[in-house]
Image 1: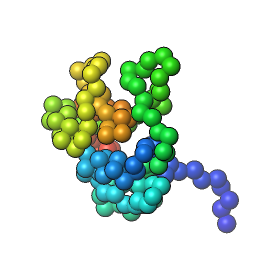
Image 2: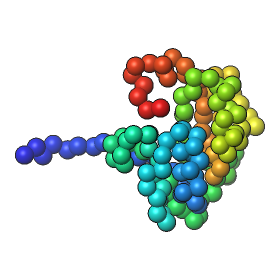
Image 3: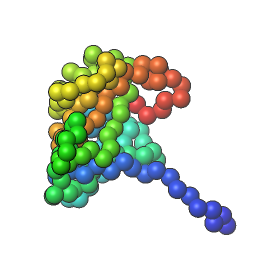
Length: 141
């Protein structure tokens, strides 16, 4: 019997007020599936995977959730993490994300990515990474 310690990433967990609503946004945006939801959690995963086969994005209910302010401001709720999403066409991805329910941040700092906000106010970036998307090493689409 192998008693070696095993640690594997299961999920990236995001706090929000309405887990299913936010999971449905990311499922639509990423063309993934909502694979689990209850009163406290909702989970999205890549198509064709089962919960636990690949890391997922998990949305956790937090009634005290406050959206972060971006860019940061003193004394305001700070972002703690954000998702970077690789896209093959930034100019096409931005209106698609808006159609899914995202908004564009007022301040932008690069022509190579766009900072967006999900419906709960979490920042995420659409990153122009055509070469990564087309790479044989990039698996989750």
